Length: 391
Image (cartoon, rainbow, N blue to C red; front, side):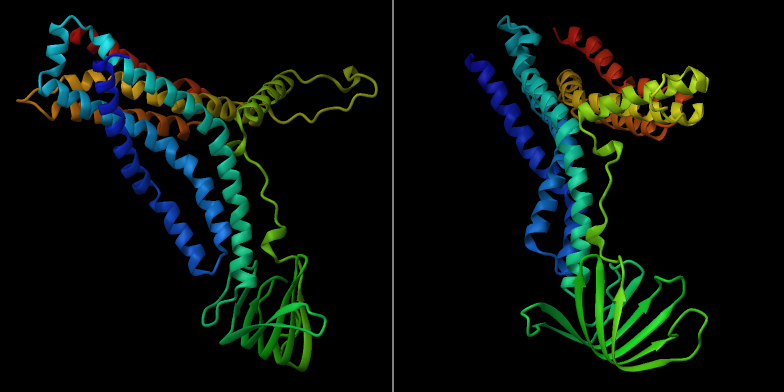
């Protein structure tokens, strides 16, 4: 690699790296706010760190293309304004040679984008949704916070003035709650529970309260009044969030899982369009359920769109650099903001088309899997128009 190529590549990487750091911090604010809520609830540090690590691929999926676009506009805009591009051309260096280093970086980032979109981000999304259940349990059951209602437990809100972690004679831990007040809606009606003291422990998916000097209003559905107890065991069945397993959605599928699901949806659509009589089913073969043609078409459309959506996002790094370099070179001293404004307009249009196609993901008549490719066509077309002008 020559001195000139190293100079261009170094300037481009520095600008992209600094821009990427700033954008990563800005786009991470939403995740940091969610993490802050978990920390305030007393969630464990390990789960918080796992949640942040699982969020990073999604942030990088946005910041890498944007950082490359901004770096292309800034670096090549400065080089054009300082007449460095003109000097290179005067020395016989073609514009395509000038673009070679950044375009190589763009190709590598597109490969990284494919990995992020099809493997790291789906896995991260699945991990975040799974961790959320554990965080809700850790915050809502194990780390009861005095002075506020804990409503992370399904259909049960609990308040206490004071708490202490203790162990019984068998060495099993429990939480002692003082001046407890609870609202239970699990049985389809509202029941209020008051107790001077309660011992709380989780047993599997159940939450067990041993109440002392307690009052329950009403004692059961259809009954009125208040029941008083000196000691009473109150079991809340199947309320612990950890037992709820988060089921994978298409957004959580990696590339091969999504491709397999798309092929299966295609076969399902064929069966829905051409239902076979029951007599034609092979003997001993299990008949596959046939959904309505409309539902099968929507499901196939959404999966097909998602495959193309991820490919377009992966190509965004390549497209942004391809169009950003000639856009940046359009900047002149007398119109220094022209290239920046036009480049940012291309970037905004890119994302708007993606959002539009995502809104139409379940509408087969709109061909969303084709609409999502429009920004790629615009970027390539714009680059094919501008690059010859800079030769």
